[in-house]
Length: 316
Ligand code: CP
Ligand code: NVA
Image 1 (cartoon, rainbow, N blue to C red):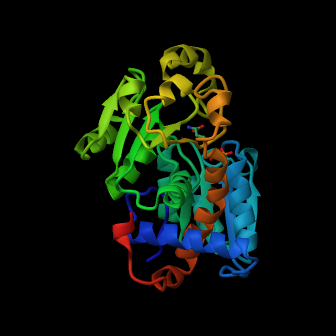
Image 2 (cartoon, rainbow, N blue to C red; image 1 turned 120 degrees about the horizontal axis):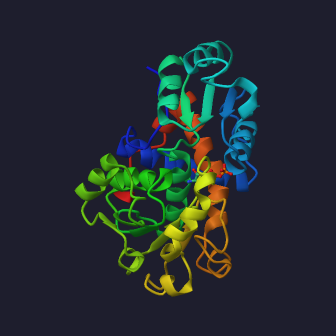
Image 3 (tube, rainbow, N blue to C red; image 1 turned 30 degrees about the vertical axis):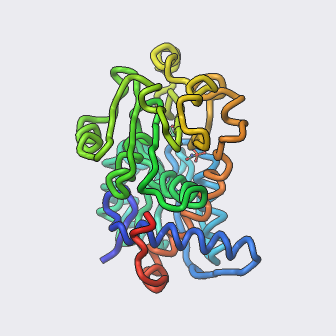
């Protein structure tokens, strides 16, 4: 049966660990000039209903480095759900390409596409989740800290796709996750319940309580793609939730600052912090490439992930 990557919840712990290890191996090989054309002759179709810098470039470059080819479909190209249903798009693409990535609004569109496609589908961001970003973030933290399960992670900002993806990661790895959002911007009820079930899981409207002694301070834009009309109200509602030097003082001395990017400097994060010594935002962006290459290899050549040796779930 084909697999998809629509969320992190559907990954077994050993698979998540395997993906991180494969990503790190592909990264090391790339840096030492070793080619790894595991996907020679394969084609990836990339459907974008929203803009992108990182996701587009890293999937396209990753596919080229793996010996394959990627096709970019811009928002106006196929009009998924308008010109043609997600189901019909999926059934046509499945006749030509080996893999599909989609960035869209409703998570249901991504699920519908995956159900109708006979080839694997990757979620490149929906309003609900951004699993590829999280894999790159976890890879970055693995490089920095080694084990992940001892970490204290603070997410400060909107309880939207990134915060919900962090809840899925915490449920898989069992690190401590605190989320600070303004009232009215919490994760959905379903995700809030999942967070509450985790040991140390905290949902608060107090950024200082979330950041206290944290190893990781993460933030995201206050106005996500598709919410532009609410920007002025959001700037007001999120005022107390800026990641700045004063807030960072409450974290551990060796804490890292993370942001999925694009950043709105002076809003959710200050220049001083995002450009400062604790920031790992460019490592995260770089690791999108390596994490997604691991995902594509896993989906199309699962035996490569399986042959990586014993699952080291204790390392998570
Ligand atoms: N972080 C991220 O997904 O960036 P893009 O929106 O530029 O793809
Ligand atoms: N929450 C942001 C993430 C961008 C990568 C958005 O959905 O626009």
